Amino acid sequence: MGTVVDAANKEANRSLADLNPTVVFVLGGPGSGKGTQCANIVQHFGFTHLSAGDLLRAEIKSGSENGTMISNMIKEGKIVPSEVTIKLLQQAMLESGNNKFLIDGFPRNEENRAAFEAVTKIEPSFVLFFDCSEEEMERRLLSRNQGREDDNIETIRKRFKVFLESSLPVIEYYNSKGKVRKIDAGRPVEEVYESVKAIFAPKNEKAD
Image 1 (cartoon, rainbow, N blue to C red):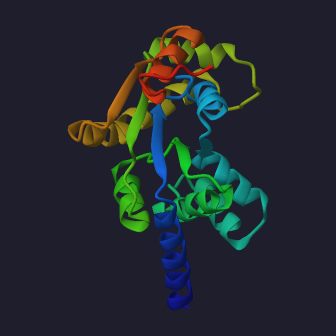
Image 2: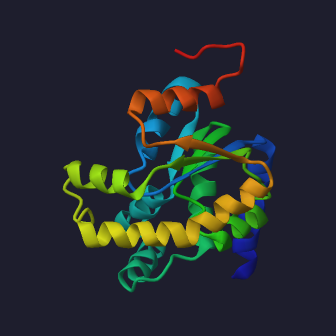
């Protein structure tokens, strides 16, 4: 059986490498405004926005064998294996018909990062890091009324802790390679977007 999977992986890798894609990892704590800014980047700079969490949720909804396995792992509080998430990302990249990607909420930890580079043979162009104080993120999460049951104070603080412990080593790793673009995300949306635009727009061009 392994050979079929290996062949599929090889196929995905080859096609992805052919795309020579531009990949930007988007990291930031819950409530740092990543989603809003990703939507702006998609609109103005033609990127495809891939959220690791959304892809996993869609797979669970599909009722596939893979989806059931993912669902059970999440229920047990386990982290979904990197390979599973990476395979979903690869598939979405190939199906998008684009070669510029914002990958949001991934890599969640150092192991994810190493696995992504090993499996896809792709290094991100840079990491867009939305830096926002816990107080501000907490305020935003509690005030947005999206009916997400995980937006209560205890859960929010737990999510902050997880983000800090797992994602900061990833940010530090890429920072050591000069690949982190840090944005002060505690400001109003328009101001944050001005900083984002400056990173994505070539110096001589103005985006809308």
